[in-house]
Amino acid sequence: MQTIFSAKRWFFLRTEIDRLLTLSIFFSFLMVAGGMIYTGRFVFLFLIWNLFLAYIPYAITNFLQYHPDWIERKLRFVPAFIVWLLFIPNSFYILTDLFHLGEIHALPLWYDLVLLLSFAWNGLLLGIVSVRQMEKIVTFTWKPVRIWLFVYPIMWLNALGIYIGRYMRYNSWDVLTDPFHLLADIGNMLLHPIEYRFAWGMVFCFSIFMTIIYTVLKRLARVIP
Figure 1 (tube, rainbow, N blue to C red):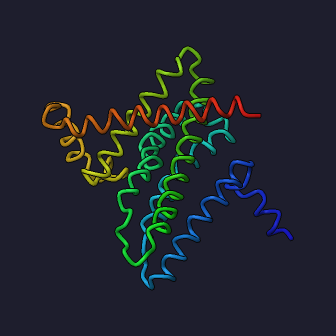
Figure 2 (cartoon, one colour):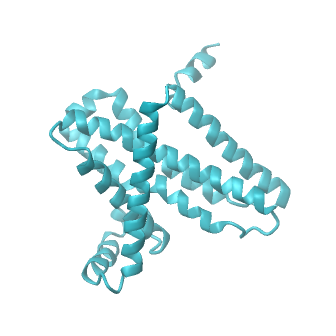
């Protein structure tokens, strides 16, 4: 009985959105399990890892909301914000996993599509909710900050992170394990914008697209009762 009550207090099931996200993520896991059973191979396990990375920023903002003392103390909040900033692109990165559509020929294409879309959807939701939570925290902490001075720069950094992860093949922890190569490659992008016009085009399009998605979902949450 005590175990049941402990489960109800589990971090990931505190609110209604937590429970809905849990069900949605569980569906994605079932899709992966079904694909492995159908093909007899360990297919798309990397999606589970990618979704775990997408959950980290959501876990950080959830933790901050339930521990306001961390927000009030800069020595705690600033490092937490930096870690969040490094991991939040992982939430939106999963959208690019749609590139893998059709790679597993043993799976029906419709199954492949639903599986990839479910992970992309969950990553997007985790990212949107986490950005919204951090938006509220930042607005509360630094009231003079205009919201567009927070949201679009975050989405721009997300888009840059998506490009760096998808095409340069860096991970969030490379900031610590391989910072010099990472900074050198980003520096090349900044110094040679014409040469990297494809990269900047992708960053611009993704940043605008994700900002639109974020704004629409935020407005819908206010309009729909």
